[in-house]
Length: 483
Ligand code: GLU
Image 1 (spheres, helix red, strand yellow):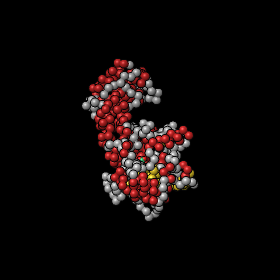
Image 2 (image 1 turned 45 degrees about the vertical axis):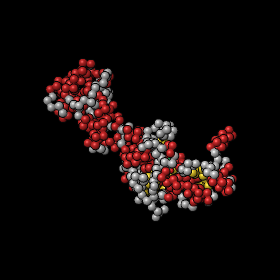
Image 3 (image 1 turned 90 degrees about the vertical axis):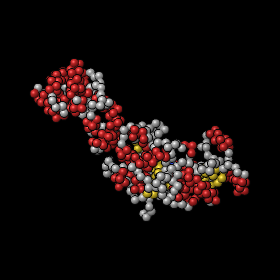
Image 4 (image 1 turned 180 degrees about the vertical axis):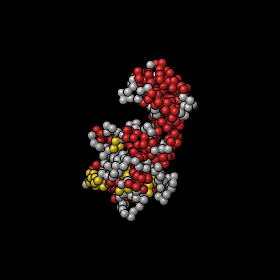
């Protein structure tokens, strides 16, 4: 394929929010195209009108945009191979199906719903796979003509070879051989004149000059049927790239149906799009070295089909959190503040509290934005806590140490004129030194007294600075009273 322009397509069905597996498919398609100077095409597969969800097409555009995967052709951006919406291509499919009938690779089927239902029951009873029994394959040309003239409803079915096997090559899974007896004479054109997905994807991929068909491994078993269609038409077979399933810990499929979050859900859970895309890139693909952090542009520079693995990849929230935390750290303080603000405001309503200062304490230690309210709720309201919180072996503190340190600290804090980090720090460290304390023996109890929490973003000085003098003194007094 050295001279062929690589063209990949993302072919989602507009059935709702975008699942992570679909987004990964789009990403790999984008990367395969871009790593070769090729084109990434968006095609909307809406032939199953019953599953159509209002607004889903806009959500697809939005998702690709948020993820940074700009398509070169598609319904909204145009291109030379349109229309890019399957339902708008309807007429063409019928012509192609008729061509297959003429070539002896497909046939009209007039079996009624009732007959097919009866057949299914029979097959079920006999414990057989429910395959169509090919009754209409036996119709003579004259009979077919008569039925068509009488306007009998029909479907067009693919005629599978009666013996032998079909072999195809997949760039990830290698050579795959399927017994033709396992292939049903599938419907290509439905009784409403619409093509099935199984037919439309082949015709469209050919007409849109798609060179690499990338999709989930759940389509592997249908691929021999597609292959037979390409062969019947005499068309070039694309490179097939099937992607491993994404699973959860425990091995079940990570899926929308099982309640696992979609891309939009994950954004709402406080993950950054760039962290998600970086993490998803590594769900089934590995670079040659051990690099972990990539922008989409960097990925396009190093991505290769050889790096895609066959075995299922596990969606690991801990790993995703690790990526997200790093992307949050890389933001400028201003960008981070803008991202964190809605979450800060969920927990901090007191207008005297400086959200920018709060945001500075959070940036280095936030894994997901959604964690923020729980990390800082103590600013607005001191939680109830027990004296046990003052005990910390490494810090060499316990309630007694805390009582001593806090009673010494209180007058010093009261006397401070300039309430800001530097003088606060100097005063507290000076106090420790003069009284033979380790710094931690003053700072740990003070942090506990001010926050009521074992872990906080920011230390005693930062928290005191944010709370302000009055509130800090009030909390230290209350802590002493309780000790
Ligand atoms: N419309 C199919 C889906 O959403 C596309 C599969 C393919 O890429 O061929 O799963």
